[in-house]
Image 1 (cartoon, one colour):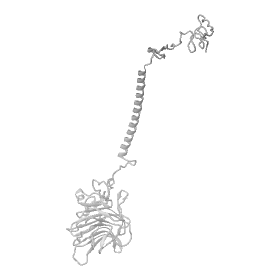
Image 2: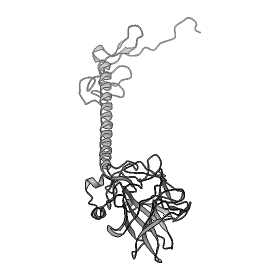
Image 3: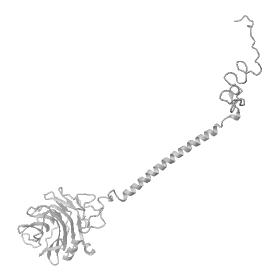
Image 4: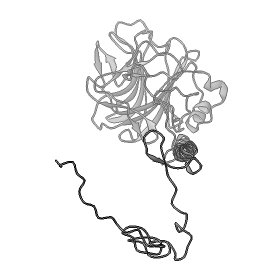
Length: 372
């Protein structure tokens, strides 16, 4: 509160000419500024130093200083340039990623192509149950596409030529042994294989060829291949006692009408029959009424017969029917079983053994199992 009178005043003296104003030292600049332009500015530079500070004006309504129109930055252009730079960076990153993916894909494709041609060991991968284009010849290595069993039923040996497939018993197997397959049997009642029907008509000429390895040295019959059920077999091929020693045999039941079946046996005596792989070929010539046995391509024995008893029972591997019971269990391996609908001559048998059969004779093969 005052009494309405003005307080006494002490008028300030007017600044001296050339001074910086109240509180400022003379010679331009005032407190905190050296003579000639202030800190950071070279001496005697024009007022303001390098790039004099912008002169601000007051916004008309708010009284806020704004930069002169000529000094405003082009914000839109700057934003465009920034966006363009970002787009370029993204483009380079995407391009780089695509290039890396292409390189990886190219390398993978190369590896796939390389691996598709051959594995590390140089062997192609193939399917197990693709049928071969042709039946391998005797002594030939199996094709990589060959399978001895049916694709839809591995328990059946596949007939590579005909349609007489052979079902294996519980103790029979068909593994690969070296470069070929073989039917392995254990010499017991559960180790055998039985066809779906007969392999040949025994009233007509035929040839049976089999590659065998007998692992049993026991006495008695060891039958690798036979045909027939019921009371007796029609024919059988294998090993049996002859004159007190084991020999390779081909035995048939004849077609005579006697009360007791008449059996005729031809044998290859004096040859090794145990633990040795042997090719046996048995023939029946219906015109000459003659049966023959060949061992390793050479004729071992022959005999005349009135004919072979007709039995429509199925083909058997590893056993034969004797007196209404199974007998002659085979222990060992059986491979390359073939039937021809003709009696091979001695010359053709030798050609079979050497793998040089002519095409006309090859066409006479009507069944083939485990041929690779």
